[in-house]
Length: 101
Image (cartoon, rainbow, N blue to C red; front, side, top):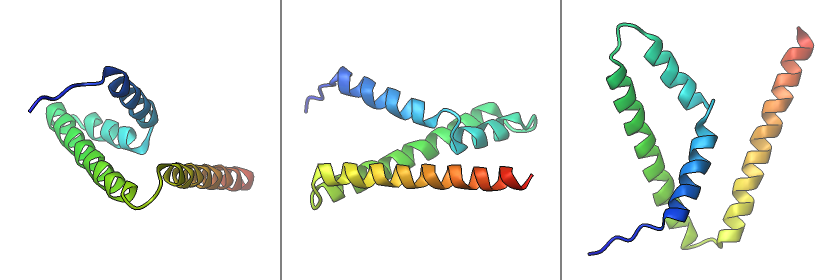
């Protein structure tokens, strides 16, 4: 069985996920664990990497399952709407809490 890598798609996915994860709660939690001087940095790296691999696998499996039943364009609209809702909620709560200060 031969496995061909489309490096353009690989790079697009890698850069998209990498940028999305910068400053994300996942990275902040990982930095917090790594800041503990009693915890092995390799353990933090290995555990965080394994968690991201499993989370990515779940995303691939769910995406593959959904794409069999829902059109890709509709999935894109649903994902985009979800991001807009989360962003709006985040801005709203930020403004709500900063106006109380």
